[in-house]
Image 1 (cartoon, rainbow, N blue to C red):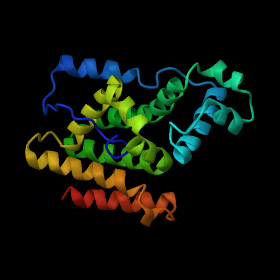
Image 2 (cartoon, rainbow, N blue to C red; image 1 turned 90 degrees about the vertical axis):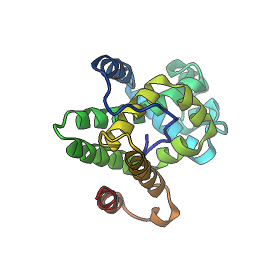
Image 3 (cartoon, rainbow, N blue to C red; image 1 turned 30 degrees about the horizontal axis):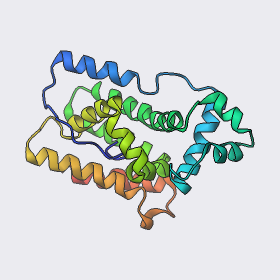
Image 4 (cartoon, rainbow, N blue to C red; image 1 turned 120 degrees about the vertical axis):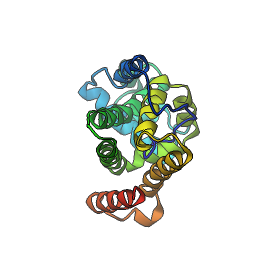
Length: 212
């Protein structure tokens, strides 16, 4: 998410056609569409912690099993490969991001849509600080996201909303600054000791100032 994950290079249209918008929504609905069982949810959370501490490459299925206090076979019962776990971890975040985008797209004005999206992005980034680092820095995750079409579709919608409909250089730079400010701030050493409410409040305030 811009603001949560690094966006790949995408072509952004300020005025998407009805057909392209429908296709985008259809792809995005696939993000996180399958409900997670309690066992899968616990596994995903355990994997997220281990990925943040050791990186995806440095985390084995056995390590995940050990963190959960179960056998490796129990992990295989939920997911056949580590790639499937990486996908599940990413889609938990992307589903939240898509929900924020959908809420923003339901607003009548572009300025209000951008405000709603920013609030949603900041909420997600703050709540998932640990995940933000994985999505932005882990090479395995970055390679995965580059190839993950639903992610690219959601990011196209994010970019369009952040630009406020202006695909000119000013709109693109402003959108990039907003995304970078959110994404970088939540994992910066200077704010690691801030509680979530304080960080959220200050991020939203600073983001609004960038829009002036």
